[in-house]
Image (tube, rainbow, N blue to C red; front, side, top):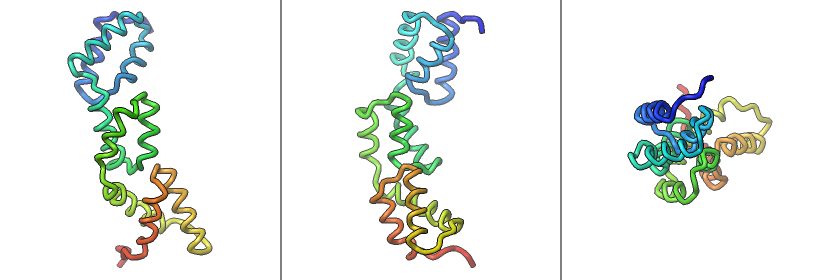
Length: 160
């Protein structure tokens, strides 16, 4: 791949950012892959942030919302993904604090009910262990999992 100029890189990055949300780490990785000089990377990043093409706080808000609602992830898994994107806890923690536990429960309950139908277990204890492992793998906390499991039998299955 032949190296691209600072201007070409900036054009590509602004186009990319205007199509969807991206974090500063993603932009840095792209510019490094394109073998841009460090000072060019710094100038492009400064421009992207100043002109609001890149805003890690805005990115985190959308990322958290999407991963919970559409990917059905719990807080721990979302936090891990944000860590890999170098989003600091100073940015993400206040956003997580705004989220009511009811949202996590509304996401977790149906996936546990669905999973429960496909699990083969000798008894309720084994079934619950398998459901707990599944939910923890999705990033949900033990207290939320317990709340769902305590009431999973209260909710009728929609099998007619």
